[in-house]
Image (cartoon, rainbow, N blue to C red; front, side, top):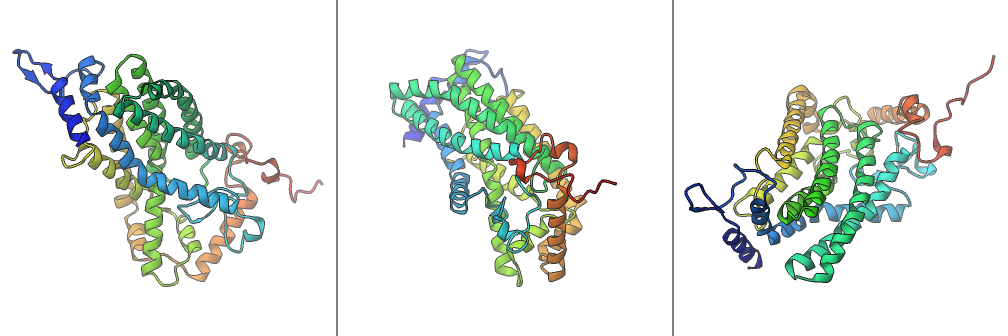
Length: 376
């Protein structure tokens, strides 16, 4: 009832006069983005903006919590997608797990560490926003404004490192257009976040809500990568005999690799349903045409189209093979074990990268470039 009343109030209070003097509801299909009328109209959907974030971010938020708990239990960062630690203890390397790296790159581990206070700060800001917008709490308003800038710095620190690491130093294969999609997510988070804070400073509260909602949803989008991977792993576990966790990991290193595109489809389809579907309890106006949010959405759809072409056209034979089952033979797993050991010993990254942007998080765990060399 509160959501419906808010929507009715927004539509009634923020209407614009047409050229003939009649009243008309603002539309995303025409007009400029940075106007008070459009921003006030968006602000009339304040309850829906809040519930859009809650409904979209809850599933990935829960799996982020699972990853954090598993990391604490194991003692190092846990890879939920592959169901194994990023850095296994020495006694498990080559036996239970076959990692392709000796140590996570420092830039990637720093990103993961910063992600914890970032996600916690987002939850805190949402609590402030709820008390401020929905309950009219003045103290929450002050806290929301002051903490917003602090949180933006944490977001920029975390996401900038994550974007660079995904583009150049990732520990798992993300090939072709899929790599571009991941990087574009990170760039979108930073641009949208700065844009949202800028709108708040200008007094455009509705536009601030719209762009900050996009920012938060993009931050939580990687959770759908984990959700999709867990579903696919359970599918193979249920329907393929001889399936094992290492078999799934080995398949991700095949020539075409693991298809992250499935998670892109799931995440963006779910967001589109919540944002635009008439039956959604969180339906809100779309970005103003030719505005920054509009062009960013078009860019992501274009990259997603490239990912679909890559998966369903270029890699169709491998896709059909994987749909029928994974190669879990002993010979294939033995080859993967030797392959992973070779990467650990020789470094997965080029020397210029492994001693630069992708340097290991611990100096003692870096590849010894002088090992086994003899002076003559």
